[in-house]
Length: 192
Image (spheres, rainbow, N blue to C red):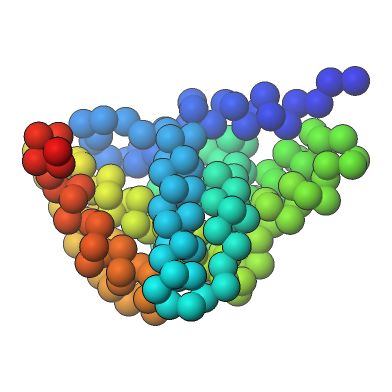
């Protein structure tokens, strides 16, 4: 018997993000998920070291790696559409749940519980909040990169996402913004 779960997820590299906007450099959900995993892991570690939190940084990184998995079936619905109104948002959340169930059906029974706990996150959990914060930070970094490349298409998104980040009540996010974000504006030579 062959199971299709991982082969299906490998197709995340074909799902483009920011589809309604001109991109100097396209980004797929596989690349994005890896970036979110690194940032989420960093937020968890920062929370543990500087703010005496008790985060499982490895679990958080794994959740982040899989946080866009449903989009291999649904595609990436642009944020302005996804959050246009409550009804669309609820319908999309239901679609994500159906897509995750489809993916989980592609696993042996012995692995389903583990991956169900990764794909189906409780929106009120601290892990989920950290991953969502990392997702926003990754989107903000994408805006910085596009603006740095001269693409003004991302100016409004950059302003909006920065406001959303500033509203977050996570000390690790504030720490990341104050200590790491400015570096994303630098050139390679300036980073050295």
